[in-house]
Image (tube, rainbow, N blue to C red; front, side, top):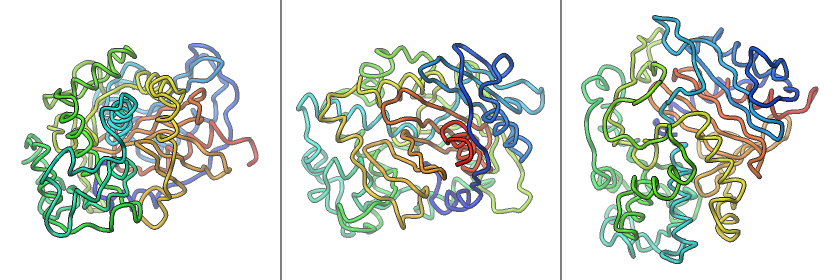
Length: 389
């Protein structure tokens, strides 16, 4: 996720698992005309009753697709959430970045065993950091040990409470973000253990640019968004969201027990870039993850790399998960394992998960950032767990 880890951990503590199974779906169905996903709809309704402004879920499987929503896209007007809504997907972006790197590996333009130093000489050094010992694979599976620039006290202070309002349009270059991380010693040696760090994915995109001679956003367009016709997906260069979108409601991660809620829809997300800067839709995320998990974006060797995971235990990250290369596997309370990615940023939390082969997927988004991951666990449990488990 994009936000500082201690706030993610607090949100995870709110996770609950109270919903049972959903039944069958029918093609192009909605919550209004298909009762088959009643348990999923109940989970969405429960999230809104618990305080989430609005939440959507879209399901694709062999029988078709289904879309359900609860709450509002705009609490002032009562406008409802819609399938075409665009929203900030946070760290779900990492799956896109990893896919581009893996495609370059398939083309033999780089190797996952290449060091960071080979492609970005002199950038990762100082305070015990050594880019000559960190591989591209370790960037993608979050085992580089590099400090997360988002956890830098000065950087983080600009993103909490009223300070965020003063800095919401600040712009960062990738080099500046890496420099912030290099001011801190590594958390572990390369390959020793999992530590979630956006620094890894900033470096991965910088390597993409060095290898290709093109901007990261251009590679996304050429390799993913245009071939898959992801018309609602973009890496914006301006602070707004073009096209239909919900208001992104945020407490700005205030620790006040009764925090003020702000409209955080507009912001400069250069601070997240290739680690969390993409805007998308539920339909586009389904198309992307269906193609990725279904083996249509990568050759078999790179697909195997994508799905080779490391444990996340003890890292203060999402429980019951293992992390691959830009995707992760999560075991639900009933024992079923789903695959995909998720992301959190100001006013928007997203989860896109499903079967390992991509044939059965669920994408959900909340346009509020204080409910934790509990609603997503409930929605996934409703869809993927057998009744009574």
